[in-house]
Length: 214
Image 1 (spheres, one colour):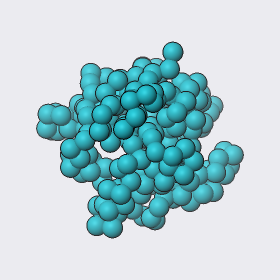
Image 2 (image 1 turned 135 degrees about the vertical axis):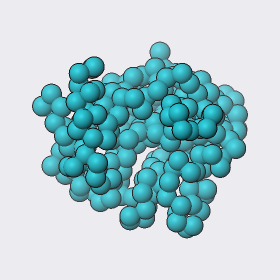
Image 3 (image 1 turned 120 degrees about the vertical axis):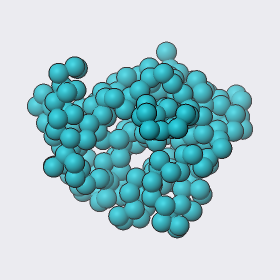
């Protein structure tokens, strides 16, 4: 059954996977991986298409955000372009929020990194159960020992379009880090115990480790 959460300001509205489109951030340099990790073939399928299929099977529509529209044209994908070039994931989030609002009006979206090797539908359920009232973001707690208690991971997470003015203001101030954004938002809820970030990869060694445990 679809997971449902109340929409801000409308207690009769219920959010399901079908009403929470997934936006995949795929505009990074992949400097630690050495090549574009979105294109790395896993069991013969490029990572970006694997992740797309997992999200579609979970019930989300899927869009991609990159530094240019034709970056993944070889995969048959036309990407949304970052709101501002060379402005990091903050610009990608802005593009996703603008697109979600233009197509569906006010509401929520699921933000996922292109290096999410595995997507489990239950993770959206955990986020959705916390997404009520006047919240603008629901994210997973960081598992890093260096992170303070309650520190949120910016992806994967669900974001509400009402956050768009704040995100655009961050870009104006050249603040490009989503990690720095979330602690500043009083309306951010953190959920646990799942840790989807353990199923992401930044280096070939990390990918090899995930392949051994899939």
